[in-house]
Length: 238
Image (cartoon, rainbow, N blue to C red; front, side, top):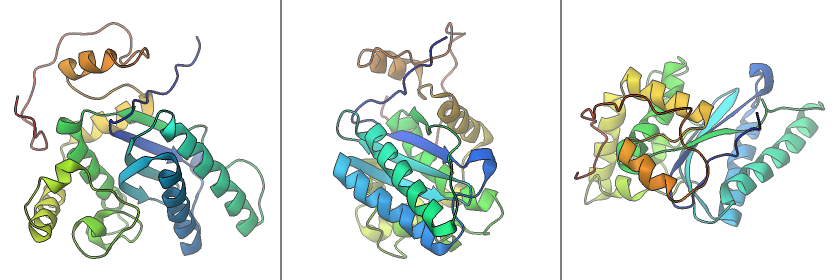
């Protein structure tokens, strides 16, 4: 069976995971981490991609972003991936592949999952027992959102701006969301959807999205409709 193309639609947030081959480290030194941030900044701006959140782990990375142009996301990821491998191999005297195949991604329903995905990304270092608090991890966007530093890479989404009328109010509200965390179900849904490449959202969202892309959004035949549950990150009014 032919492999489906990636699901990419302009103007929607996408969660991206890029892993090292055989779980090998893709960052060995602080210079490696900084090189990746520089490349993400350069190529996201060049292609028209807004990066809302990120975390760089030793053997993988997560991005939450919105492409503003057609094919902007795959072009950005191709350029970043190729440039980084060349620099990494030169810096560490190695040759060959670095990535575990192509990047994984999913398109998410903004109102239900964008803030939850940001929290999911911020808590990666905590789940990995690298730090006890997300603000203690240097290589993520979290400290930029809680006012500890200015991060040129991130473009806050409108939902973040809606958390408060002042910078202090937004930073405090977002910090509270991260401290509250997300449920195991939300974490599993975000991981599974990204690794499988299927859209993440409620049935109405998927129906609306399907009208904008010929690419299939779900696996196989639809099952029983699931009941909508209260989601603390859902800011929709419906």
